[in-house]
Length: 439
Picture 1 (tube, rainbow, N blue to C red):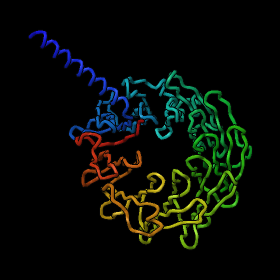
Picture 2: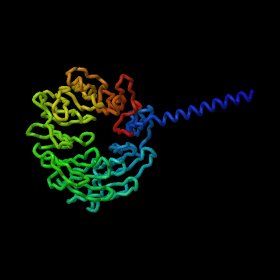
Picture 3: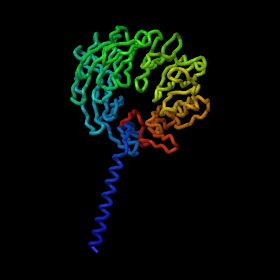
Picture 4: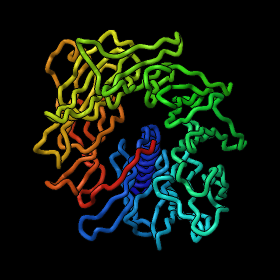
């Protein structure tokens, strides 16, 4: 009898062990897509960090090392955050590792430096933090600094020509995270973080805007209503738009095309540029005039532009247009929409304007390209009362929504596109203040 019970016990143990191994293997094979949020408890108003695994429908909550009403600045991968606080008009910040929960003080004397919060920016590779240091007692720390979070060392990368930052307008990281570009009083400086090598455009103009290409090999520069391309490898500067009063650059996903919204008198007109043929196109015709564009988005296959126009002050409408990249085809999507987005290559989404419900957010609908050009009213409602939204995949929508009548309690919700039931990523007892994706 004992031997039989022992055999049964051993058999059950083996089955259990095999089940655990299979479960671990399945768990390890499920891709991890996380959302990291900075939350407020609705009862005691205390802050908390929440990390939700969207694939496994799990979340964990953790109290912050100190409570602050100021913003937290998440790294691009969501695995670290900078917590900012203000004491005696001095901004201080600390780095919190969201995995180990180790808090690293910022290694700088704040009696002589007060970096504005809106100048604190993570590099694209999640390693460096750049910030402007405005000295309060000495000029020694004046300039743009870079904090290496791995070595915990800070170096002054660039010192502007004048004390303070009256003319220090813009700086931005390249997509690779190894280069930073600066506009200082109209002059452009490109700096390699590792080598500390400086370079400048070969054409001297008063620049006012810049945007990196997706691969980080080119920098589009706007100056005196012109568009120029700086090649990082060859260090050459090539004008592409010289007579259209170009604005900022909108790069296509591969960087093979570019668009800009040009100001022509009181009109805002879109031009595209094909780098392969070095040819430009104007978007819009008499049939679908687009003379008041404020934003555009490229489709993933780079064939189409989704264009948001400005609000008409007379009737408060804001049309959205769909156009081919060469301007040959175009059609109005809706006469009054907001925040258009692409969902794959043949589906688009936007928010409809409901004036009486703006405190709650706008509803999100989807429509296919075929329905747009066939002028078929086949918009499909996918989410209600959305403040902002992001497509994680073609069939998964992440929405930041108001869940109270005043728009003060906000939740993150996953809304699968194909008729399945969505769910909230964090408990209903918390309001989501900030969030970022972590893949």
